[in-house]
Length: 352
Ligand code: DAH
Image 1: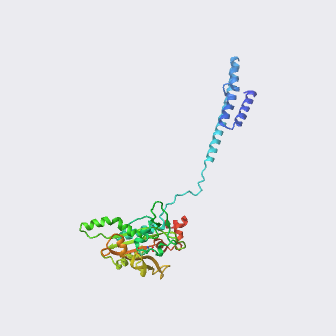
Image 2: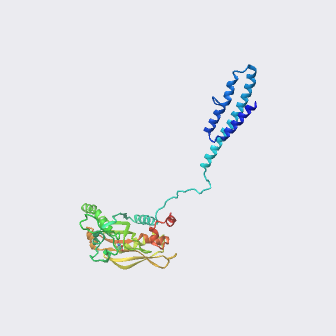
Image 3: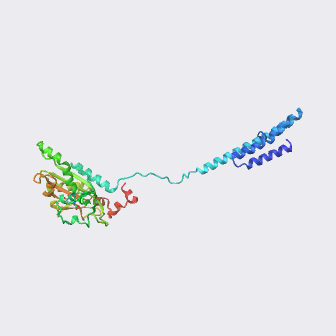
């Protein structure tokens, strides 16, 4: 190799080193071993030389060419390595970061209570019914024997709803689930009439109706939206004693406690006579000894049975209305009802 060859190799190395991308490198290559590159031009110049010289100069040029090709190969590899490195860095995963786990969902504590109530009453032969939350004044109050100026109708605790084209019939967000007593009877009245026509005994009505209820009321133990579960058992002669047995059984099963005490305290509801409020008392645990009100109840008033379209001499039985929210608070030891309806996941996930 001549010094000229060495100089070409040197400038090729410098040009390759200066190429920052594969495209630039290919351009640099063309200057030396491309069609009209410097080495290629030298090769072309050999043709004019005598054979001897051709051989020795040719070999030297080839050597220079190989050195340039080797430098090119090195630079190609270096650029490819750098590109891979950059890509790996860009796509790097920090495997030490905690993962984003999809946590299993769960039922709301009040839903758990409603499921439990339905299961227990289903095991005692009760059907489960569902009804509208926007209810007519007649179903909410009149059908349940509420006198026209009864305080339960008051604007202070009932949400009234304006519905266009309702012919002036007042509607409300139902303040209790009791309208379901009359609704359920009406929904099945044809079936009952047909059974009687066939000479069969009148089928019993044995149903619970859980759902949302609404009142203008809000503090630690009252929420404007809350839950109730109505119960109704009408038969030929379903007595107050049956009410005591059914409700006592329910409470003991619900709270999984055989030594739970119940107290039926005389009370008044327009739709029952006699009426009672039901209190429970735990014998152990944090609430032991205190009487806690859980439901209203009584023997269904004859006027309510008439409003169902049934004969009060033949359809006798009890009704009750309880508060599933209250039962949930007692069961889990929650002291503020509003926690159930705030939607705070930290509270709710404890019931998962
Ligand atoms: N509806 C009543 C209330 O909201 C509760 C109630 C009391 C329901 C007595 C009944 C019953 O079925 O017999 O306060």
